[in-house]
Length: 476
Image 1 (tube, rainbow, N blue to C red):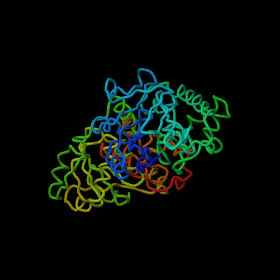
Image 2 (cartoon, rainbow, N blue to C red):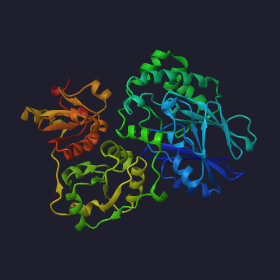
Image 3 (cartoon, rainbow, N blue to C red):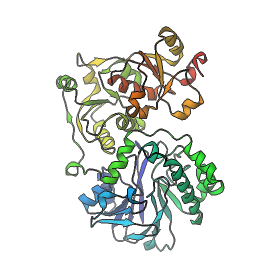
């Protein structure tokens, strides 16, 4: 058996390519939309992708299952559980789709996969037990656990409410997750846990950085799993729902599109944005139709000079996806301001994975900043200067863009709290005060919120620096 974990570090997402080396057939589980990567790995290992599966209707990226089924002839294995509201609508009636119920099995070559309903993160969520029959195994070697069990954590059950807007669903989902986790008691200790996400994903709050684990180890060391197996249902529900980070705004759109059907890539290819010369940029900017994403990493460089109206969206750490997904609508045409040409392909991939396909053009940021008449600077202070600034401007207000949990532990007196990933959805709640001082825990999250608010014509001042440096005199 061939098994390869294929990781997208920007979204901390794992897909799995599993192949039968005897027959040359392979399956991809939980693929992203730019499927050329999986096809290449398969071909490089004398395999052909004949099947694809999703563990659930994803919230954090567009699935590549439809792309592989309709463009490359793969059979798609998808959950039929979860009730009428949680079906893969795009696959219904398609002869290449196989809709699975709890306990169903199928084979890819001599590899057997068994679907196990593991509801809670979502109602239709399935995990897959993998058995290498061709290698002589009579018991499964691993569990493709999707967003059910992670290394060090379990999948969050609140996204249907916090991201998709289904009011009142998070507590029942948490209770369902508790029951699903307890049912894993029947599974053997030796099972490898092959999760769909690692540290950095917004699909949990305490995911480990180790790529895989073993069920026996997780039973002993995964706090959420251990509490489900050993603790009360009420305690588990309370703990699993507390401290979950606010999801980016685009999660709701991913749920919708993965349910109804992700759009196929034009001609099966990634967008090919045009490199534009600096003498064309002013016309693009003044046209007002394009969103400019500035991929530079140094936030103070951005504050000192940037193209007016652009958003700060550095590539490292998945911030491009979070910023773009939180602040940009799917129909918006995009111009990339890159550090160099080598960033363009990766930036396009990251955007396409969250359904932002209209990447029209790119230009080196250094060239863009040299164009006269289209750049601005952003006022900023340090956290240590915030008390004096507020005393000088008594009509000012403070916007804290940390998480609700961080805010509850302490905050500036009178500050308004809206997580930076939710600003676009709650723009009408942003104080109208002039100026508006925006801070977070270190300055990083505020450096994304400030350009967005400025682009929405708010008079904002960026507050850079550590939260602990805010004078205690203005804290409560």
